[in-house]
Length: 124
Image (cartoon, rainbow, N blue to C red; front, side, top):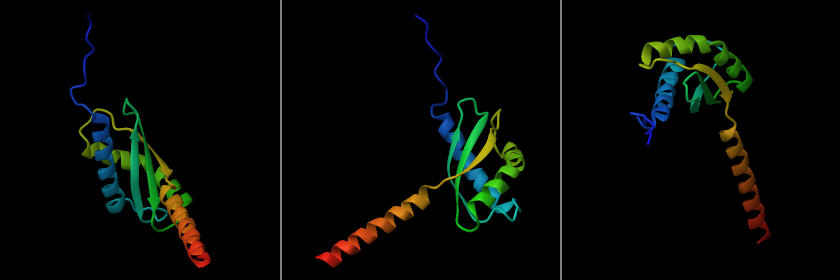
């Protein structure tokens, strides 16, 4: 019977993604000077199993999502270099920034629910 070697560190991918999220948040807030990138919130990170690529989902508090996406993707090399200095892993992933519309959709749904509730209350 051949036993497959189990990973010595379970959930390592989640921990690496979590650390990347914390470090990226700090790097963007303190060191990124691109005017296209306003106040950005990193919502989630998805890292490939080989740590070669990471999808970074973000939302914006100020500024335009399209401009922020352009600015972050333009600064991806700079941010990756900053991660090299902070992370202690063999491969730091290439970063791909994607605007996350989850909060936008949630706000729209809340508005629709509130409208439905108020119209129903007026009928009663």
